[in-house]
Length: 427
Ligand SMILES: Cc1cc2nc3c(=O)[nH]c(=O)nc-3n(C[C@H](O)[C@H](O)[C@H](O)COP(=O)(O)OP(=O)(O)OC[C@H]3O[C@@H](n4cnc5c(N)ncnc54)[C@H](O)[C@@H]3O)c2cc1C
Image (spheres, rainbow, N blue to C red):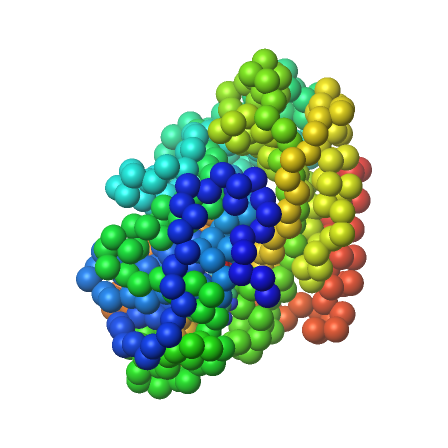
């Protein structure tokens, strides 16, 4: 595995290019965390704020995984919404999930504010409907979110209304969420890492955990050293591989790709996204886009089940971009990259404990920027002796993908094909 950041617009515009040391000793701490993405870093911050000693082991670089490559879209709630959770776990528990559905976005803003993180944070997100079925769904989503205490502006838009937000004729309407937003994802991760270090946490890069010995203390071995800790948090998500076999059985790494155009001129950028908000459409395999601080259009979409890296990313994503914005025909693409997120069958996060002192949260299935920040708080709470909110997530049922390890990729692609067909037909 290469330890350099993916060759993305984000890596090129990272605020902090310092490398952290490799682990070369045997050290002892309160909590060892595997993975320096948002789940690991948010957990580290929350623990340090509560007085724990923390060591973070990162196989590559800080934000090397999905956290440093994503669309940067702050999307509220979970990858499946509260109504779906209610059908699975009942109204009483769903109410408790609802009460947490908007907390992740608040935590991000708290960190940015408290730790002065420079990550181009902008408010406002648009969900764009491609057909009337999707628009009807957005109306139901608005009612659902308001019922569960969404604070702030939610506005439904018809076909002419959405043109004030997106300069594309593809959409029949949409919903604006004032408490959504967007940011430079790698700079958020790097800012969080710097805050971890200011609070006394240690971060080691190029230090993959290669073996875990359960017990008290739990021992985590890397090629160059070892950490003994009272608690372990596993936050390796789609890049964890088979280090913890219990965790790989009910989840599947998936790739999604992004491109960044050349910087657009002010007039063009204003025409495409007049309010500088981020946008995602409502398809099962959705497109998502926004402007960067230097006015590039960052456009992503599609899913590669099983996370094989596609050979020509631009050939996959540019046609999607041009379908939305034909006026950009001929635009130059400066960066193209891929990243992996972790899918679960229910598309809800997989949370739990192994033995008495190993905790994990993974599998937020595409919408993880906000949830991972909530997860950090839940993991810190449970380690600090307050288990109720963590246990609620841990109670979500999870199942292996149909077809087992050998057939889960084609079976999932078939399922996605079915949902994409329904999207295309608007049914
Ligand atoms: C291209 C793309 C676009 C996306 N867009 C959005 C979006 O706009 N909005 C949204 O909400 N979500 C989005 N997502 C999803 C979101 O980015 C993820 O859900 C989230 O970042 C997951 O964070 P994480 O910390 O759990 O995992 P990651 O960020 O993947 O971090 C895991 C880290 O663990 C490390 N690691 C793994 N194994 C080991 C080991 N053995 N030892 C040490 N370290 C290890 C990895 O190197 C990695 O750095 C997107 C994802 C991708 C890939």
